[in-house]
Length: 126
Length: 126
Image 1 (cartoon, rainbow over the protein chains, first blue to last red):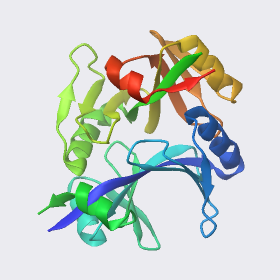
Image 2 (tube, chains in turn cyan, red):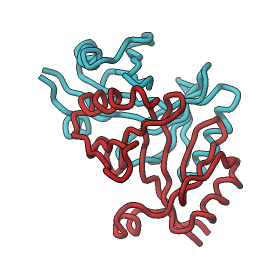
Image 3 (spheres, each protein chain N blue to C red):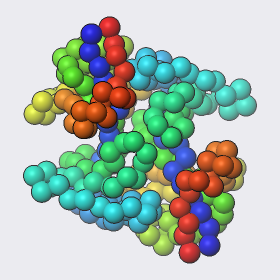
Image 4 (cartoon, rainbow over the protein chains, first blue to last red):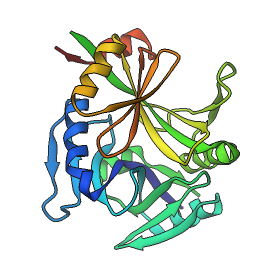
């Protein structure tokens, strides 16, 4: 038995346009930005979407969005999603990057939100 | 003065894979699906994300996500977003489809959520 929930929506922008993208989304949604000193590829968009972390990420790829799914058991959650048809694309630190049927990316990562948020909102899978 | 809010996250999947994508996301997020009889290209994902309508849309294009922004004044909201750097890609019924700096799509559409939700949650732009 393990648990998971959607943690974040990432707006992945080509590196050369990422700063401009962050500035646009901040103004478009009327929210502040938050730099993450240890992870300079991310610019957080404070409370842009209800209950979801939202951030612009600079990527070496075409523009895309992806969803982050946080879980208390990364291998089990990855296995569950792959049994549903997702395929593993790569790994990055403790995260597994999957491609869903239809072609969209999602990342499975260890619990990142406050424990009480995860406890209250995660789904349980058996 | 006009108002707007993020209304929906659309998972746009190539037409041939859209049914499989809807089945995956429904199971992955543990939510039911809802067909929209008048708009067969959409499959709603019930309460997949807090406070946001979420749906898979069959598109004649590569896999992508887009955000829908609902507003009480489509021309004013479109003008606001274009002044921030978005460009108009096309129009569909009453919706304006824009490309944000960084390359992501967003649609501006007339208010689609219940009036009390829009009244409580929309931002006001002057």
